[in-house]
Length: 209
Length: 209
Ligand SMILES: NC(=O)c1ccc[n+]([C@@H]2O[C@H](COP(=O)([O-])OP(=O)(O)OC[C@H]3O[C@@H](n4cnc5c(N)ncnc54)[C@H](OP(=O)(O)O)[C@@H]3O)[C@@H](O)[C@H]2O)c1
Ligand SMILES: NC(=O)c1ccc[n+]([C@@H]2O[C@H](COP(=O)([O-])OP(=O)(O)OC[C@H]3O[C@@H](n4cnc5c(N)ncnc54)[C@H](OP(=O)(O)O)[C@@H]3O)[C@@H](O)[C@H]2O)c1
Image (tube, rainbow over all chains, first blue to last red; front, side, top):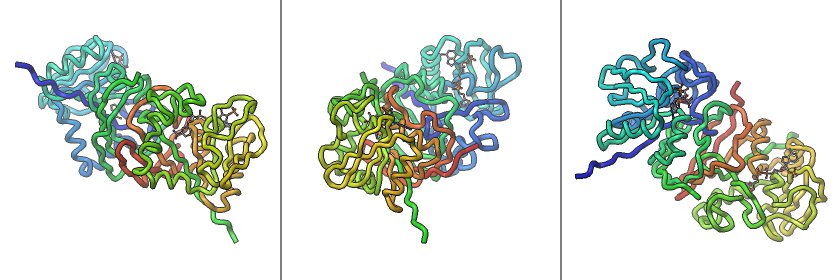
């Protein structure tokens, strides 16, 4: 008997110039400075103000059986875990599955309501993915960001499917998707044009050269 | 009487990571190294092998009444004009209109068959655009590339409409659209999904901040 192996997908909201976050992330501005007021800012309006219209993409984002994210996506705490922080998502995060948080700073697993458990992985992207794959038991794994994390997975050839949500502005500064990522052959497998964002899915086929 | 003022559009083929050309441009490889054999390479297949399918976009590219391009788009000659070079396009280029080539190296205008005239502009992007606007007589002006040229126009706030033709691969190196371009509010005004490329038109609304 072989265990079916799920896909590794990555969901990321980016500007037209490829930024997944502005500079200056803080507890008040989780996505950094993107020139708009308010929590979600200009990048993430499609998720918050336009959630009904974008229900299909939002549902797909939370359909994985395990998740990987970077420590900066998890929160604004840097360096040692010197103050309580259990993520942006309240007591019952929308993941309902194991979430592996990449960090250089060890921390005990943090169980939340609704079967989300945040585990902290200090031995790199491959180890985090291995743990997520095992936890997903053949289901899909989703790498949620930020760009620093996604770029490492793309460079290592570990992403099967890249789901971009492209917001109509440029930022000029911040963390950029594809920074340090080599030449990759892609196949556009799906596209849906919503009122402001464009949802494009690419399958990652192979490295070029 | 006021002269109607045409739009300033820019047409550019880019990879998913925003490159408009690979590294190592040469007479044999006008678009630089992009991991494919052949003249057009991986970036420009939609224009050459798939020209029928993409006729509308190609026609729109050559509908302007005057053009601006960078010296590297015009050809592979660098430094002084020390050998004959009249562009990649043969005796009758597809522009049929005045083309202003940005360069630091003065050269006399070069008339071609079919009313294309290449003029060489050494006093910067605003001067080149002014001359193109005057030559277009109220018609549209198109900035054709490369990215070095387009980025200067975007940064100066001089592009009204950005028409991107997005090819399904990443390059990781080369000249990148949006390099040095500040935060800009855009509006997606048109999108057409062709078999390989995605054609997206953005209107440039304003600078953010
Ligand atoms: N646009 C979107 O869809 C989207 C998605 C997610 C997040 N975001 C936003 O993006 C920003 C965060 O993104 P980011 O790119 O700055 O950071 P990130 O990828 O979320 O996190 C980077 C941090 O994770 C840890 N890390 C990453 N790789 C590691 C490795 N191989 N080994 C050990 N630790 C590792 C390091 O933290 P330590 O060294 O400090 O432990 C590193 O500084 C936030 O503003 C967030 O809100 C946007
Ligand atoms: N993907 C596409 O749609 C597309 C479109 C066009 C071109 N391309 C490709 O892109 C590559 C060329 O692009 P590129 O970004 O390297 O260069 P480019 O923009 O075509 O040309 C840059 C050169 O133009 C001159 N120049 C630009 N701005 C100037 C200014 N303000 N004042 C004076 N001179 C100025 C300079 O030449 P000097 O100092 O040497 O005179 C500069 O090195 C080629 O491989 C080309 O085939 C692709």
